[in-house]
Image 1 (tube, one colour):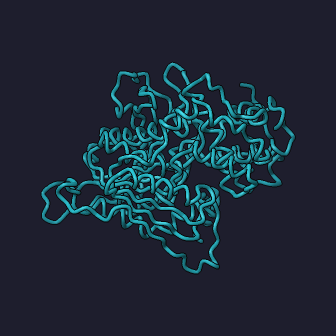
Image 2: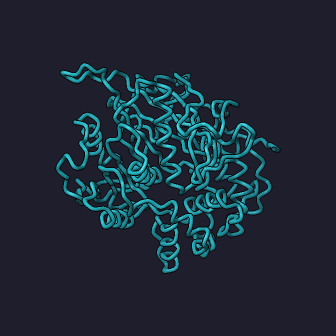
Image 3: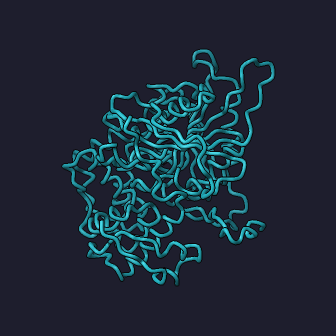
Length: 496
């Protein structure tokens, strides 16, 4: 691939000083684009995103994600391929005291094909406490964490982000409370190809396949570290990951993984194509709410790409000419992730983001039937948390999924909590005191009995939590803070 140098001057005016250090890095040649050509505002804006994303990777170009030749599609799902027992955290912003490992393991895609995938394990600073009166060694409490949308290309792996994408919002917070966090990157992210060079796509929206990634990461973690077998675990996820966690609970009802204690789903959009349909219908009515734009950009384009990966003849149906140009000649070349892709399509009018008829095709509808979560049997308990002001996944969509599940499942062990006034990411922090205790109660409480042996909890509980001092609260679709590093020459900056 041809490369061109992007000089620091290109970004110096707009980028923070830390980014200037990497602004002179090599950027793939993006001159093939006719709508985002070098020198254009689109190009300059997108390169800012690319440079920033690269600056947030702990080990750019890490060979760790290269699959060993020992990989075989005959291996059982959940097989350990390789383990990095102690990841070098020098370039990570993981809190002192915590340690980390990384895994390569086998999982399965939507069609059951065995493929390699990656995950990280975040370890707490202390051993679990012994239980009074027990002669058994203490078991590490575990949370299987399903991350939200990071992108669809291999560099977008949370395991290679300095702050692991969700930082103190979830993984750091859990590990600092004494829990082991097992977090898959999902197939196609992190590991990008088979040993023979065949690409591994990330089939965005294929929730059951990514639920497999979660389940198989747990199995591989236990193989790598027997101290985790059979640790009790809870599954949790946010946004895309919230939907994956929900799908995992459905998988658990059919193919249980030992030690399961429940699932927590934040801001879960469980029907990606259904959301795109609703967004296009809203756009046709003149609705310009943020969720419409969010659904029609990266979510829609990633879903189209995912369907094409499964059914090549679909051939990116629905992408307009301008989107095709940006997707193939910029995003695919630069391997953009969430931030850079949003910048890449920021100037495209919403009406030009797709040909909305693609969702009516038989291929799209078949994908939807195979992949959507909710309205199905699941293994509880399931805690669903939503923000009442979520501008990415409207609370009404989540409640619809809850209602469909409660209608389909008798005595469903499901709790739906809406935090009024909270947006897509802020709801995680706003609800932390509740969900953290919920997880601890699941992991440290008595092992659940079989349903016939214990009284059923109230089914399908719904409640709202009012916001305190709502008139002064700042809300954003994204987090409003960053976890970053001081320059090596100025460690004194950490003192405030």
